[in-house]
Amino acid sequence: MDDLLPAQVSVAEHWSCQAATCHAFDHDLGETTGVISTFQALAVALLALLPGASYTFAYERVVGGFGVSLSDRLVRFLAASALFAALFSGPGMLLYRNFVASGQLGRGDVNAVLFELVVLAYVVVPTAVGSFVGYGQKNRWQWITLLIGDSPEPRAWDYLWRPGVEGVVRVKLKSGSWLGGVFGTTVSGQRSYAAGYPEKEDLYLSLQVKVDAMTGEFEQDLDGRPVPVEGASGLLLRWEEIEYLDFQEIN
Image (cartoon, rainbow, N blue to C red; front, side):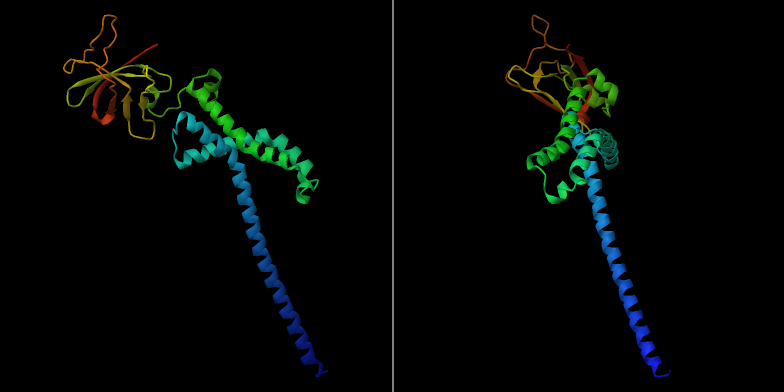
């Protein structure tokens, strides 16, 4: 009986080592599986946010980046992505049923042109919708304003110089002198421009007009219109230099 003890101990040690090895293998496998799961979750999260990101960037390209802090963008990404996820849920289910669950995608038995069109649509559709909504916001389409609000501009400065507005500007500088100009597009195609949020407020008037430097009164022609300064003269102003600004919109 005693002669068997070493063998039993040896067998026990053998199984103990095997168990330890198996446990270590399972532990390593679990870590590897965890890494894969984390990577897959990250990929799914990025794919889920992609439509919202495409929509937001396209919208801001048209109307400007109002409120472009990280938290603002994250909320916009999530909200837009949730909306597109709901819109794409039906087509997504059909694609999953016909290509993934059936095993066609895994076997590579998918039409390359169809696959390319689906991937492009996943990016192009949100981008087109963002551009369309931005264009509608610029032109103050009523049904667009019902969706995203009438005045998304964060400052009065941005609202005053919103797209499509034209008018005559008269400013009194902190130095005490007066200047004037036209905010709009000249006959030669030169356009006025106002910096938008979050940049500092500066203003370019494509046409400078004659103003009495002491009183601020416009010099007018026989038709009562402001007289342009001789030559192709524009005017660049910074808000920090302005004490008073008068804007007369041209309908």
